[in-house]
Image (cartoon, rainbow, N blue to C red; front, side):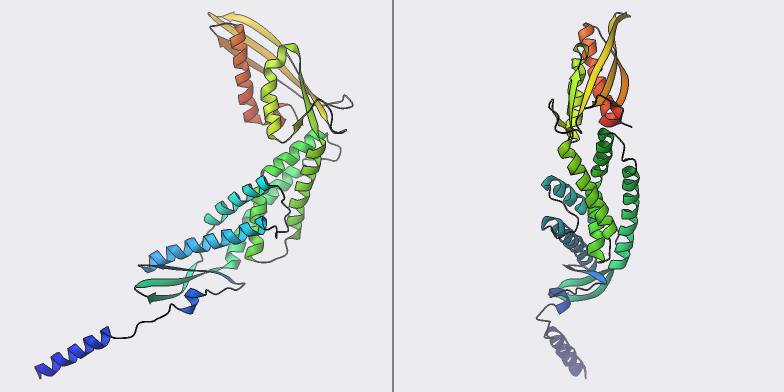
Length: 324
C-alpha cells in the first residue's frame, strides 16, 4: 500500500513539473488596448508591485510623448513657432504629467509569464480630464484677469507690460490646454483662441516697439541695470524709433554726499521718466538709493547701483519704472 502511495506522489510531481507553460505573453501585454475611455499601460517585474510601478512609469512617458508630439509636429491648434517657447512648453509637459494624480488607476489584468509578473493598468480619461480642467480654469482665470488690465487707450509700454506678463505663463497654459485635448477630445476653441490671440498681440507689438534709454551725466551708473532688465523682456533698445510705438526713457538724478561716523555716504534720488514720440510722459517713478563706504564717495555711489539692481529684481522692470 505504501509503495502505491509513493508511486502516486512521484507521478504527481513529474506531472506538475511537465505541465506546459505558456509559450507567448498574453495579447493584452504585447498589444495593449486603446480606446477613448481609458489610458492603458503595461509593465513587468519580479512582483506585481514592481510590475505596477513600471507600468505607471510607462504610462506617464507615453502621455508625455503624445503631448510633446502635438507641439513638436505642430499638430496642436495652439500656434507656436518659436523654438525656445516650444522647449519651455515641453518642460511644462513633463512636469504636468509626472505630477498628475493617479488616484483612479487600477490593475485591469495580470499574468505570470517566464517567472515574471505582467500587469495591464487602466486610468479613466474622464477623471484625468476633470483634474486637468480644474488646473486650466484656475490658470486661465489668472491670465485673463491680467489681460483685462490692458485698455485700448493705454500707452504702448503699458500694453507691452501686460502682454509680457501674460506670455510668462503661456507655456503652462499651452501645456494644460493641450493635455485636456489629448485626454478627452472636447471642444476647447475658446481657450485655444485666447492663447493664440495673446501670443499674436505680443509678437505684433514686440516687432514694432523699441525704447531708447538716455541718462544725464550724473545718472550713467544707473543705466546698465535698466537696459539689462528691459532686454530680458524682449524689448529692443534703439536710439532710432522703429515705429510710432517707440519710447524714450530718461534717467535723471541728484546725489548728496555726506560724512557719517567715519563713512562716506552717497544718497541719490533717481527719476525714471518714460515718454512716447509725442513727448508725452507715459510712465514715471523715482527711487532713492543710499550706500556708504570707507574708501570714497565714488565707491559708495557704485554700491547704490547694486541696490538699484536688487530693487529691479524685486519689483520687475515695468513696476520699477512706473508703468501702471
